[in-house]
Image (cartoon, rainbow, N blue to C red; front, side):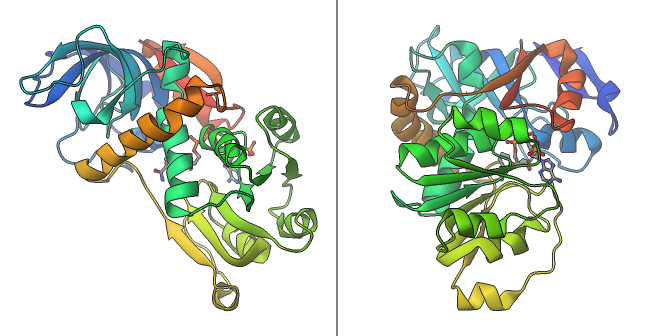
Length: 326
Ligand SMILES: NC(=O)c1ccc[n+]([C@@H]2O[C@H](COP(=O)([O-])OP(=O)(O)OC[C@H]3O[C@@H](n4cnc5c(N)ncnc54)[C@H](OP(=O)(O)O)[C@@H]3O)[C@@H](O)[C@H]2O)c1
């Protein structure tokens, strides 16, 4: 098989196309001929040497999500036949033309989605849905604050919260992204210029504040989240592009009874990964099929241009997901 591997920790030039033997297919697993791969910041961190793949996953081939076609079925696997279109999450190894996954981690692609759109779904939508509903216990009609609302996860978070009938406020440091997010259902936007947004959120919610925060930035945003939080709010920490350390006023956590909840998809055990696939299949696919939510593709690069694609991601210029075409 053809893959893009990290030859040593470093810049985008360390990503090289390599030939590898086709992977074995264990009991209960399927092999997928990959058509598109999503590019994530975690891939960049892994290339830099800071985010190693969990045990059992190719250590040097990044890639956390794919769309493709079932290519071969292992002994004991009964869910799919060769030729069926599937998509899903993996803990690594998706920058390749073949991936092997447990059949219960793969999900049939709704006919309404083409292969390109399908690859833009798993990380963004499963992360957003899991953070908002499963971790954040979001209820219809609550006020939601989605940070970096033009990001892959942000564009999904806005749509998931709107689908539930919530009031959705988004933040971005880029005014055009707030404008574009309106087409996804964003009702109000805060253009963040000096790291501040809490006063605006309180004004927009007539003093109530945000019930759930989809926190994709971290760092100093967390104190502002507390300033913007409603009583009994849930702040769900998903990303830390703004920093992993912060001073916060714990009195606000206590008096407002705020929950700060951390979450990560990649390092979950197989049982929880299967649950995540079920969220995609049972909760998100019907919305995708009905056009209630839709994936947002920013740019598509060739697999061989993986380094260029990662560089584009870290410029922060994109709106939605960056993909590789295999
Ligand atoms: N926990 C998990 O399982 C999980 C899963 C998926 C993603 N993530 C994390 O979630 C975050 C979002 O992922 P994504 O793939 O959706 O990201 P993305 O599409 O690459 O977009 C990230 C956006 O965040 C904003 N941003 C970047 N640095 C910032 C900073 N220092 N301060 C404020 N805003 C900043 C930028 O938009 P502006 O124009 O607004 O600045 C940027 O476009 C990342 O940190 C990612 O690693 C976590």
